[in-house]
Image (cartoon, rainbow, N blue to C red; front, top):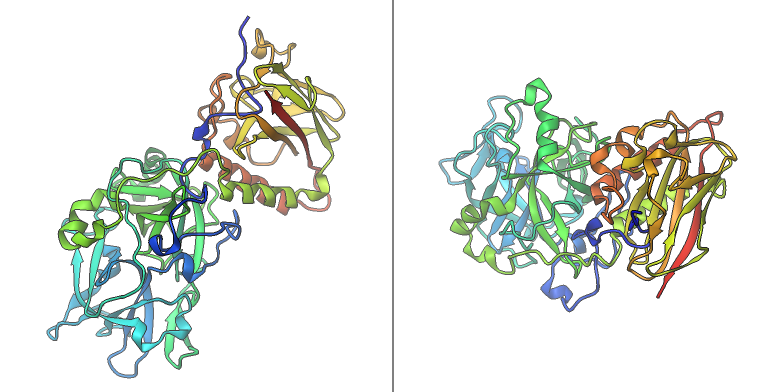
Length: 510
């Protein structure tokens, strides 16, 4: 007889590594620019306004008119040393050094020709920029080998300031060792709020005439995406078959899109957070197909791949850099927790329509075996999630044993057993064994109408629990699942088929 170790109490600690998970540590705010006290404002749908305290090294690149003083904001960046800004090379595709030593726009057409490049630091509202926050550019260094962001890669550049910035600097990831591969990342910028949106001229509060996509700083949370999956997605499209997506790039975003960096955010930071809630920049906003398009992840320049380039010009950028300190996996990723709360809020009217029973009752002895019974008031597709005592979220149904056929669905008022002794897929599996962590957890059941478009997520075998071994689902997978569920539940009409949601608390005891 095979004993099943698939636990409703603990699945692998690898579920949530690194970003956004945090345990208050010894790092103080002055030693950790951008240290966060909370991630509660991060939503799964849409970006949010950002606080300068969380992005104190954020830079905004702009063109200033020679006469008249108008300014046009075009890219982002980060301060990595008192006189150096890290940004993207493609921000300067139409910029050259003039005879006077200044860098100017040299576009063959357009009203910005001849406007000089400036850098703004220390503001999260570009309508209130003071003269002391504007820095002239002394030099721009483009990474050798760069010609086009998507084709050549090497989309990274350094901007040298004529006057020093005395504010906070962002820590860089200069080693691939310890960099997360499955985590929530965060990006910020003053870019467009929708694809193709052009900056509009306006009179700013400081009296300047400015054009900027978003005058206030915005941030967005994005799950990291495996490079191979990102490359395959792009190279399946004829126009991107030669796109360079490899070890020198990172990808982040949602399968369904709707949340992304956009035009004007280029050159800005992509960061992850360590166990002390301190940010480290792992990427530079580079390129993508439009903004927030379906099956078009954002592509970012991997900072650690350009360690030699950065340190050759900015040796002081190594201060505070190094291997990542992974986030404590025993603490919930707050982005996932917030997304789950949003899902529960969206389905508030459906609560109580499905019930989950545990064979052993609400208390489960550590090492003991148990099974589940699900009883729903509505028919549809069943998704069963476990939130264990550490806050880790894992999909436990469907799994590899039920990726096809009617076993994926529940009927109205017809109890379903998991594992089901009548289902050949479960033959020889007597139940689930309770393992660490001990403590209180909860099971969340969701029943969606059959036509809801989540099958391609919940039924992809490589994303399932591997057999019945305790193996955590990737954070990126869960965020995409929640994103789909929230969107589908929010869009349902008055006459749509009903949904169901329910939860059961349990406690693993020693």
